[in-house]
Image 1 (cartoon, rainbow, N blue to C red):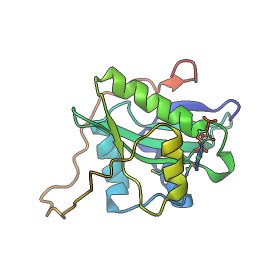
Image 2 (cartoon, rainbow, N blue to C red):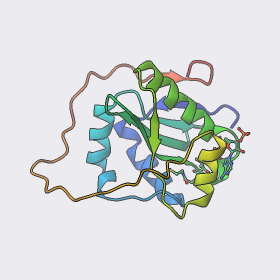
Image 3 (tube, rainbow, N blue to C red):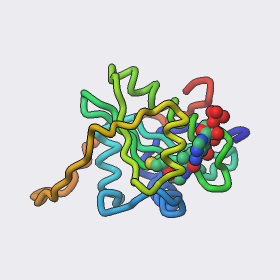
Image 4 (cartoon, rainbow, N blue to C red):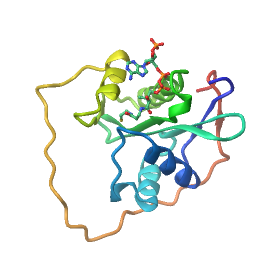
Length: 165
Ligand SMILES: CC(C)(COP(=O)(O)OP(=O)(O)OC[C@H]1O[C@@H](n2cnc3c(N)ncnc32)[C@H](O)[C@@H]1OP(=O)(O)O)[C@@H](O)C(=O)NCCC(=O)NCCS
């Protein structure tokens, strides 16, 4: 964890982020995780999602974070298996909450596979509360458009440290 720094997730991180997700149990990937779809998500939630990199630039953590104006949502929080237990997951979470709080979001939800016991223990340990009164229903939408990537001005890549983030 020494020297690990957080950065805003950018489209150019995609290959490394996707490789990390593929290497992690508990992360379910679908066509909603294509390069195009993730790019569209990042464009809709600018500055919210993050990656963690070691000093040698190796990517060791990632999380997607966004909000719909009412609730915050986290997706695919993952830390490289050989980098776990050093506080990187907590660091990524803290950054997400800082950003959500700055946007006036009061509550955050996360989706978790029922069989992901270790993941569940992590969230509980971090103070998240189960909502057994809620369930998820889902239905396919017939898409008439491809995910839209809104062009956004590209500010200088923000380099953030534990202190700054
Ligand atoms: C869950 C995950 C992101 C945690 O990352 P991490 O970097 O190892 O977590 P941290 O080191 O920051 O741990 C923060 C705290 O949680 C605790 N913790 C970590 N994993 C835990 C687990 N599985 N069960 C209980 N507590 C756990 C740590 O002991 C630490 O506690 P402390 O603050 O009291 O010292 C990582 O294990 C992972 O990538 N898992 C696979 C993907 C996954 O399931 N993601 C979540 C589902 S979306």
